[in-house]
Amino acid sequence: MRLRRNSGRSIEFSLVFETASGDLLTSPPLPDVTQVHETALRISRLLRLPDPEPAENPLDAVNAGIRLGKPSNPKRVRTYKILVVLLACALSVPFIHALWYDKLSPFGIAVWSLGAIVAFVLLRYLHRMSACWIVHDGAIRIEWLSLKGTTEVETIGGHDVEAIDVESGGRKDSLYVITIRLRTGTRIRSPALAGKDQARAVQAEIIRRLGLNPGSAA
Image (cartoon, rainbow, N blue to C red):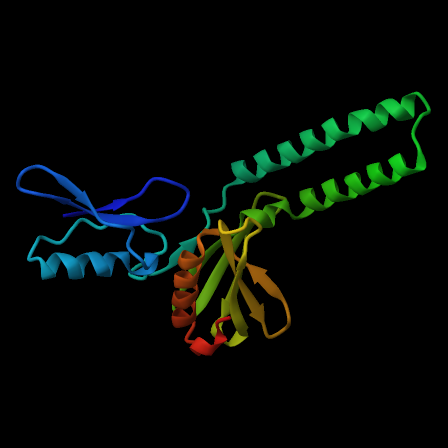
């Protein structure tokens, strides 16, 4: 028996059994992504098989810190900035052409101004889109890159949290995020998770690690 991480965007694991005849049997995905290691050990011991090799799982509860999102990477933020600038330049071409030939209407000016504002906001806060959460016992460490390329850190303790919710990440039945509502009224959204079941499992693990009442979930 071995533990296998399934291919695809979501973090899913299955058990693979090789029979004496050489056939391979694959289980459905294990239901709780934060308990994959413990579930695999229980099954191996029930079947009196050797313990399977642990698989790389950033969301597993056995980790000292479960990680949501990728570690801060200056190259990734730089790439996003280049894409935003290229997109802004491409969308500006029709407006520049109209301005050159004195055909730019007030509506066109308004649209162009709005686009410039959106591009500025994206560039200003793009670094926070690459945030990484590391959930320890008692606290969440949030890391992101500043515009200068340095790593900035914010720590949230259980006493800071009012509630922890699971919300849609913008794509129906696809991506979900964990939203933490602080006592100050601030809302902080996690990196996206694939699937509501996965998000619910991570939510429960965060609540446990922060020592919160399960009633904090919504």
